[in-house]
Each structure stands twice: as structure tokens, then as C-alpha cells.
Amino acid sequence: MRKSAKFSPEVQERAVRMVFDAKDQYPSQWAAIESIATKIGCTPETLRRWVRQGERDSGVREGPTTADQQRVKELEREMRELRRANEILKLAGAYFAQAELDRRLKS
Image (cartoon, rainbow, N blue to C red; front, side):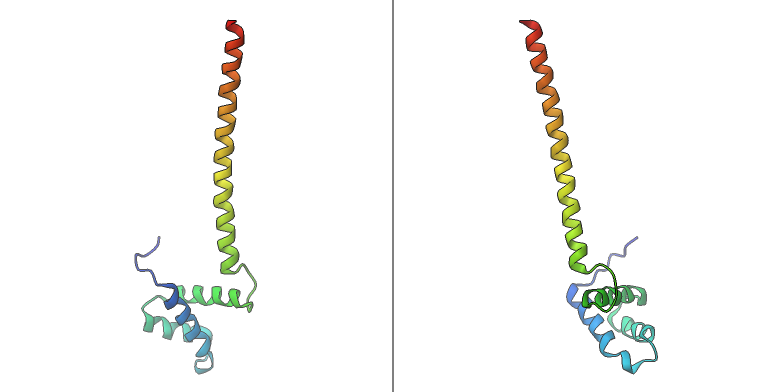
């Protein structure tokens, strides 16, 4: 379940940058995340997820980047549209084939 408060991409990027910049000032990355999360008004877990995605985007951590994830979403959307169009064409073909059979039987 998502909370109604959403943060703009600019706020997310700034918070992630703050964690990266402050890593030497705290005993651990989690301590930095907890401190900065309270300052920007999000939960530490939310900021941790943003930081992990930022690490993937910068190549520090393995996994799909934001661009990869967006491309997958676009391809999945396109695939759904093509499947719908294919289903419509199948139904139309079956309808016209039946109409042709009916026409031939009547003559």
C-alpha cells in the first residue's frame, strides 16, 4: 500500500546525493540514511530504496537501472497493445470467414 505523499524526482536525487556526500560523516550508510530521511520527511526505508537505485544507476551496484526499468515498462505496454490488436484481428477474421461461408451456402 502506497502512502499519498510522493516526492518529486528532484527531491529524491537531492536526498540520494546528500547520502553519498555524507557517507564519511557517519559510522555507516544506514546512519546517514536515517539522519537525512528525518530531514527531508520520508522514512529511512524509502530513502534506502532511492539510494540503492541511485547506486544501480551509477554502476556501483548490480541490477537494472532506471532507464532499463522504464524501457521494460514501455515494451510491456507495447506488447499488451499488440496482443489486443492481434485478438481483434483474429475475431474479425473469424467473423468474415463465417460470413463468407454463410454467403456460399445460400447461393
